[in-house]
Length: 270
DNA sequence: ACCCAGGCATTGG
DNA sequence: CCAATGCATGGG
Image 1 (cartoon, protein in one colour):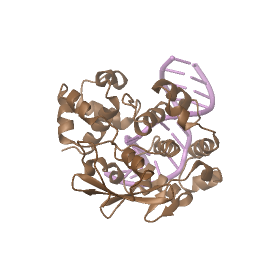
Image 2: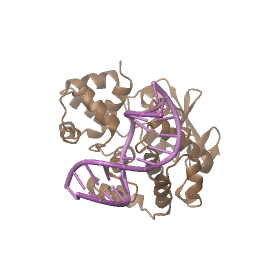
Image 3: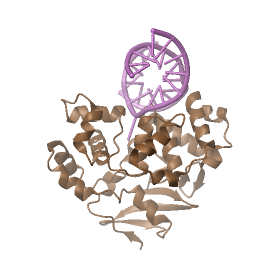
Image 4: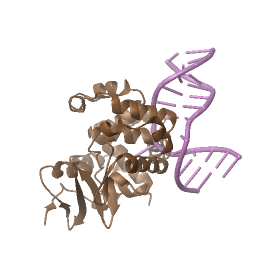
């Protein structure tokens, strides 16, 4: 049986919690004890198997996507060692041991997903995003592929309104679908330049750009300023915080992992 | 009915 | 430069 050995530490339930926390996530579907995700034209199934993850099918196409989805590339060991110097993170890294923030494998999907999540609750965002997937994505086995830019180029503004998009967000998504973007080139740039290029696009502000750095590019120092959930979490764990932007310096160079641990730690409050 | 929720562009000072 | 405004949905 094809079983992948994740880097240690690794906890499947904590790592995949996000795919269940806000209702179903059709693009990363939790069903029957496994995550189902479409890679290329195939459905991939991931489920816990002892200390590893059973992945079917497992090959050169699916392996890197699974690695992204289950956060394999994060330096958890380094983070945990560093976290010993901060009482809050020391507790969180113990309580959430093995939590690897899931990365979003596809850049276009990452941006569209963030746009759906702007300003509204993640329950609302996931509901709208799922309707987008059902309308413009493709069913493969139990899972769904997220709509491609090419496919969304044929979507009408009114179609998106019918799915619950605001006029603005419909414009953003259709505009992005038409924008010629070189994501490979983008990925080779330093954080600040990635942000500058993304923010120049209509509908993408600092918050969306930071989450792209954090969730798609896995940049260690990404720190999603302006995120209301992160604001609440930071203030809950560090009550004396004046400025969430400034406190990011304190977590350098582990801002990304810190943000994820604070958010998940707040969500799974003991 | 109302408020808040993992923002953003636009407008007006 | 900063403040005010509208936006659509889901959950409480």
